[in-house]
Structures are given as C-alpha cells and as structure tokens.
Length: 183
Image (cartoon, rainbow, N blue to C red; front, side):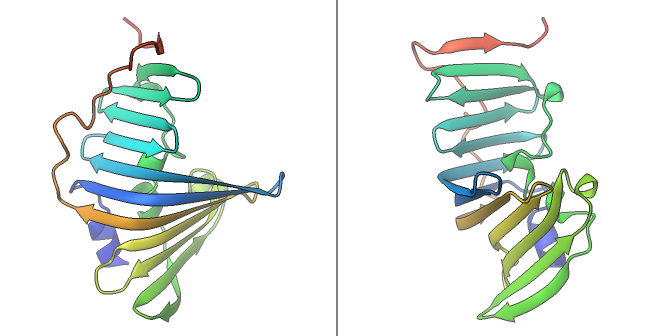
C-alpha cells in the first residue's frame, strides 16, 4: 500500500485511460463508458468520460456535455469534488487502512470498508494493484445506496508533463455557454 500511496500522492502528474462500469442497484442496470484522466498538482485535471469533459485549471471548472451541447463554467471552489473522477485516485487511497484480501498472478487485492461519511459517500473501496509497480489495475467503489463504480485502467503513466492546453477548455462553435462564476 505504501507504493500505491506514493504513486497516487498527487505530487506527480498522472495520465490514464480507463473503462468505467456503473451498476445502478435500484434500477438493476449497468452503464459503461470509456474515459481518459489527466491529473496535475494544484487541483488541475482533465477527465473525458464518454461524451462529457470535465476540466479544471486550478481556479475554474468546466463541464462540457456533447449530448446537451452545453458548457457550464464555475469557480472550482464551488464544486464538490469528493465523488469526482479526478479525486478518486488520491483522496480514496489516503487516510484509510486497507487490508490485503488476496494475491494472484502478481496482483494484490486491497480492501477498505466503513461508513459512507468516512469516504465521500462510499462504504467500500477495493483496489486490485500490480504488486511490483504499485499501479492500480481495477478500482471498485461501492456507495451507500449499493451502486458500484468499477474503473479498469488500461494504461497509467506517472510523471509525464501534460500538454500545455490540457487544463483549459474552449467551447466548440454553437455550444450554449453558461458562466456561473461571480464577477
């Protein structure tokens, strides 16, 4: 776990490609999306999740929905990030005692369970980690309503500086821009 925490401390840039499967317990239905994640220090991130893009330059937060043809801009300080994909790799892995549940083929299963108030609404966090590298291959988060978000990471890279414009967002032509920042 020490190697995992070192990798995902938020000190070095992280980029990853992933598949997300969300199981909605009330509807007994699964939803699948592909995604990309770029993280840098100073609350900078870019998350592409299906047809949505979430970007923060450290001050402002941009949420673009291709389906709605809409861009919403807010101050980052006005956003609750505890459930946000940009936060999952750093906040969920720190400050919790994970127990080793098993090992198989160079992969270690680490698990935490507790009160939803202790983990941003989640009652269970399970990480399947590559033993030698400390890279998370699968992260499964179960919330208080028994909904399960499973991230399967296909490629994770540490320390590669993001492109200069990675944490900026410009609205495509014809998009409805709603700017909620206080002036």
